[in-house]
Amino acid sequence: MRILLTGFEPFGGNAINSSEQVVLALRGQRLSGIELHTAILPVDYERGPSTLLQVVETVQPDVVLCLGEARGRMRISIERVAINLLDFRLADNRGHQIVDAPVVAGGPAAYFATLPVRAMLHALVAEDIPAELSLSAGAFLCNQVAYVLLRHISERRRPYRAGFIHLPVTPEQAAREPAPVASMSLETMRHGLQVVIGVLAAPTLVENDAAIAGPEGYGLPVAG
Image (tube, rainbow, N blue to C red; front, side):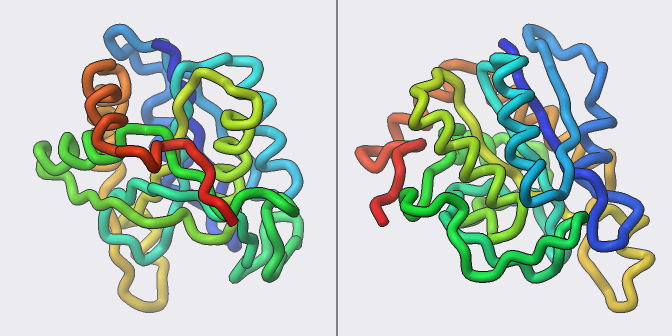
């Protein structure tokens, strides 16, 4: 199975992005039955989504799993929905600060992730790794790339599955914050992503979770 794992470069004046750190920690690791490809995306309203789609079309993966950082999160957050909204609380790395705009004008209100999110959650909890299902990926670059990716899959009828996970900051990042901030060790997050990748490489789990999803169907757009 060919899996593409992506993270984001640091943003907001910070020197570290936990999603980038996890991707780099997993890059080059040999995982049984898995051909793992990795990429770091720019935190750029214009270049982030286009870079992701370029890598996807080059790699032609079976699964795309995008990672991002979310300050304040206490758990590995598996996102269920990407929404058609850009509302940046801070500027991206090129100074864009989009407010109350659609990701794609006239596009569906949202897309569901096409990954076995419930099976991923159960596998993480079974390993005593703090994890949760989260409703949406927010309204910043993380949500934007997830929406663009899921739209790309839906419109072009690509056969791969895709989704997004938000990660807490690392303890090193939290130590630099002026106020207390929840964090998670890089090793715990690295192990958590190995667990998730194991789930994604198990076809029976994917099929079972897709059946549980019901008629709403992972990957189908939400009318809007």
